[in-house]
Image 1 (cartoon, rainbow, N blue to C red):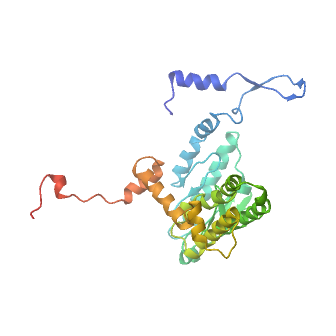
Image 2: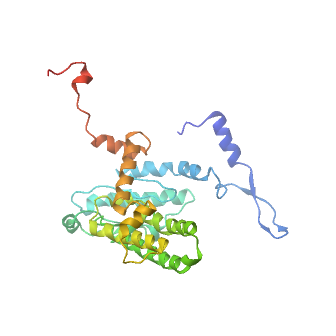
Image 3: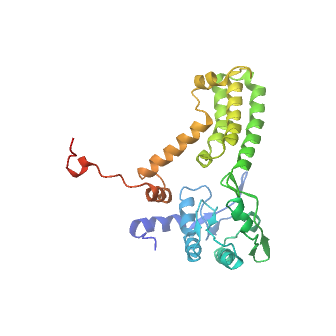
Length: 300
C-alpha cells in the first residue's frame, strides 16, 4: 500500500524487530525483555512510523466525507454544514465512534477529555445551528466557546480575541520577570530573552491574524512596544517609533503581512504543503495573454 519494498523495507524490518528493553538504576540492571510493540522514544524514525501507523484512520475519516489534518497525535476534523440539523451532523458522531473503535483495536486510545467541538460561523449562522451533543460511548461533548489547536485558541467567530488575550497574559508575565533582572544583563542576552519569550509568541501563527480588527492587533503592538522599552531601558514618555527603528523591529501589522507574503511565495513556488498550494492555485486567476506572448504586436 505504501510502496516500500526491497532494501528500504529490510531497513524498517531490521529497525523494528528483535529489540530488547531493560531498567537500569545505579549499578543494578533488570533482565531484558523483548519489545514487540512501539518504537524507541525520541527516535528519528518514530514520527514517520507513527504517521504510517495512523494512515488507516485517514481512510475512515474520508469515508464519512470529513476533512482532517494530522500533526503527530493531534487530529482536527472539519466539515461544512448547511442546515445544521441533527441528521446532517450525525455523521460526525458516527465517525468519532468508528475512530474510537479502530483505536481500541490497534492499541491506541481516544482521549475523550481532550476531544472538543467548535462551531464556526457568523452570528446569524450560529444562531440557526442547533447546539447538538456529540456522543463518544458513555461520554458527551457539547460545542465549546473556544478550543486550542497546536497552541492557538480558536473561537466560534474566528476573531482570535481569546488567543490574543492569552498571548498578552503570558507576555506581560515574562516581561515583568525580564525587567526585574534587566540591569544585570547585557543588551545581547536581554535581547535573546525578549525574542525567546515575547517575540516568538507574537509571531507564532500570526498569519491567522490577517484581517483581524485593528483594535486587537494594537494590543499585540503594545506588547512589542513594552518589550522594546524593557530591552532599551527607555521610559514610556519617549516615542516608540525611533526605538523600533533602532532595533530593526517590524511593527506587528507588518510582521503579519510579511508572514502572509512569505507563505504565498512558498505556495506559488511549490515550497508549501500541497493543501495550501492547491487552494492558492485554485483562486489565483490565470495571467492574461499579452500581445508579446502570442508573437503578434498590437498596432501603435
